[in-house]
Image 1 (cartoon, rainbow, N blue to C red):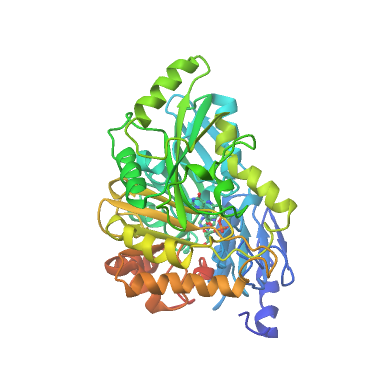
Image 2: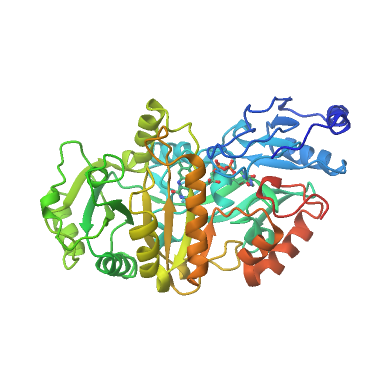
Length: 502
Ligand code: FAD
């Protein structure tokens, strides 16, 4: 909860800006304005000022300014799509990174793009594909997120089994550290900063530029969904697809759980890819339980590839998978349309008011060893009526994640992303927000009680003990990096890991 206002804290921020020659602008907002809430709509804060920096120099000046005060903190805010106040700075300074003029420079010869930290991935997509026929290799499902925001976490989607998360697809960054230094870092230069910042929850520096790897963009995507009633068959097939040799699988593999009912949001109708397609419940085996599973795959192709060629490639890849034959759906869409698929859902959700309502989301990485028990305890039991939105579950490969980076993962080569993307329908139709939060806690407690090997993705803890436990044997490294790059703990206070001047 926000602390009560104290005049002297308010009073000393205004003179601090005197003599600071910013090219951007400074606003002194009220509570509830931009930066006072986020996509989660669960946490509220009152920043002292929102700075719209014009360039890297402005970012550095603001951090140095904060370092001259005994209490000021600085949060870089991307698109504010965190759900637990991670990009907020209560009584601190918020840097609106989207205000830095978005720069996207593509070098077609080396197939990389230099992009500003505040650029939205959807803009990077359009610029690279439409201007150069190239595209980043690894994505998130939704692209209204900034480059700096996803790189501070990981950035995962259905391509991560091939290329790793977005943090594995960056070769260089320009970062402003908590000391106010502007440094270029890569695997060979300022190495510790490079590895620390990627997945570093904004703790070590503000990313002002990232060099992103590109590949030739396809024209089209064959997008397919198939249904399973048996979780072990679903996971067996999903794991077989993500462990095939490179080039021998689909270009995208994800999956989700849905309710075995006619519930319009959580049930059968969440599967078809086109309004003309019909999900025939008569095809579901009688032995099916309260939830079913959908494997979602996609294959890239070029305009010049003949439909029969694409059919053949798909059949080769899909042959041998054990889904319910009659519950198979497909559409062919343009590559950009495929990557912007969640934007359509966003527009619908905005129209019916649930986009701006609270989102008590829970994201976990669960080890393959425990995913069957997780299904039994969580999907088939706690969540058997759904979450009012997608319940993603799909396998990822640990070997695609460089463990020198800051993200922590469960043990073992295969682990699952579980994303419970809750949307709040007007109460009493669904659970109330409070009940959803309690249900999330119940899920985490069940995982702990059952001894599951899991980590929170987009983690959120309120205590030092919680964070220490989250990082486990990497806590010391994380702390050491903080001591080096942000010793006064100025940056990203909304993560609640290190208090100012810890
Ligand atoms: P913010 O929420 O603004 O910031 C997140 C954190 O990063 C904060 O601590 C902030 O201080 C820090 N930060 C922001 N910018 C910078 C910067 N330039 N330098 C350093 N630190 C910075 N995630 C996935 O991995 N895959 C998905 O498919 C996916 N889909 C999503 C769909 C939706 C609709 C939403 C709301 C979220 C989704 N996410 C997904 C989660 C998303 O990746 C994170 O919430 C991400 O942090 C949001 O990016 P943002 O730009 O809004 O960052």
